[in-house]
Length: 509
Figure 1 (cartoon, rainbow, N blue to C red):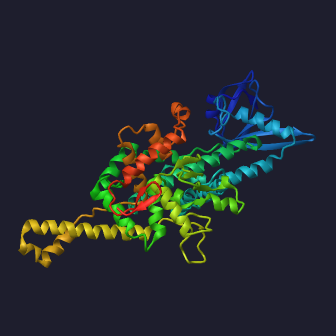
Figure 2 (tube, one colour):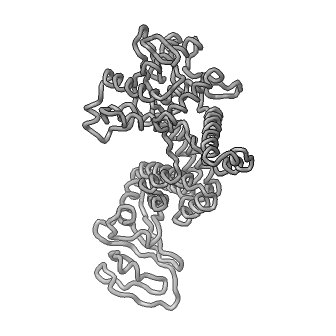
Figure 3 (spheres, rainbow, N blue to C red):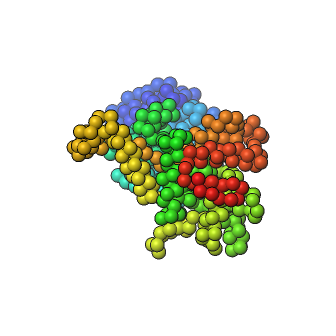
C-alpha cells in the first residue's frame, strides 16, 4: 500500500484501522475487526525508493529496503514520532535520513557495523566520557598539572554517577550531583567545578560524535549537553566578588609599617633557618608571580651548561657586572611567555643564593628528603607559611594585650583569667596565603603615583588578547625595569631589618 506520507496521516495510522488510498494519497481510514500490524510505503516526491513504515501494536518504525547487487537489505531507521516527515531537520527528517543511508549502502558500507558503533555510543557512560576527556586533555596542547588534578578530583566526586548511560543523564542527574556535593557536603565551589568539567567533557564527546556522523547509520539522534543547565547554579562574577569580600578570601598585605613592614622583618628573621622558603616567598612577592611560576625557575647559566633546551624552562638570568637580572616565565596561566626584570634587591638576593647553592639547575630545588618525591623543584611552603602566620599572630596578640591591659589598669593586667578571655576573643590579624603576595604586589603597584596601567598589566601578565591597543602598545623592557625598581623600592620601604643596597654594597639597616 503506497501513498504520500504526511505528518497528519502518519499520526492517524494504528493497527485498528487501514488507510484508504486514492491517486497516491490517503483519503480516509477504515476500521478492521481484528487489529493487526501492517506496512505502508512512501510515494512522495523526492522520496528515496524503499522507504516504508511498519505500523505495529506497540510502535511504528520506519524501514528502508535497498537492493544492492542481487540482494535486498532491510534496515530500520528509527521509530515514529522521533522520526517524521517534513521536519526541516536533517537529524529527524526520515526522508533525508533514508537518502543518506541508501547512498551509504549503495557505496558498499556495512550498515550493521555502523549501527553497532552507534549502539556503543548509546551505551557510553559518564565515566567513559570523563576518562576520555582527561586522556585527550593530557595529550593536548600544554596540559596544566593543576587542571589534570582538578579533573581527577571531579571524577572522584562523580563516582556514584560514573556508571550511568549518557541517555539516562538529564536534569534530575545534574540536580542530584549539585545537591550531593554543594548542599549535603557543603562544597559549593567543588560542585561548580565538577559540573563545569562535566559540561566540558560532554561537549568534547558531542564534537567527536558529530565528526563521526558521516559514518553513522542515523539510528540515533545527536546528544544534547544536559550539564548546560548547571549554569543556573553558578554564581555570577558579582556574587563571587561579594562573597570573597564577606569571607575575606583576598588579603593583600597593607603597604604600611605595621603590616608589610612587620611582615618583611618577620620573614627575613627566619632566613638563617630556612633560606629556601624565605627566598622563595621574597622573590614571589617582588616579581608579583604565581607560586607555581617561581617554583619552576632554573638558572640559565646552569641550563646552558647542561645542554638543555632553554625554550622548555622558565629561566632566571643574572648578567655579569651591575646589571639587574631577568626572569622569563613559560607555560603561564595566560598561555604566553612572560619576561619581567628583577629589581636591585631581588638581583642581589638571587646572586647570594646562587653563591650559596652552586651547580644547581633549579633556583629552588626540591627540599624533600623523600626519595619518592616526584617534583624536582620546590613547592609551596605550607608549613613555613603557617609558622610565619603563627609567629606574627603571637606577637600581634601580645602587643594588643599590652595596650588593652594598660588602658584597663593594673588589676586587669595581672589577671590570668582576663588575659585568657582576651586571647579567646582575639581575632586573627595575619590571614594571608602565597597568592596574597601577588595581590600585594598589584595593590602596591596601582597605588604608586604615575605608574601607568599598561605597565601594571604587563608586570602582572594579565591577558590582553581582547585589547587590541594593549597588544600593540606593550611597554618595552627598559620601561618595565624603571618602574619595577620603583615598585620594589616601595614594597621594601617599610622593612627595618632587610639589608640596604648602595649600588652593589650591602649594609644592615
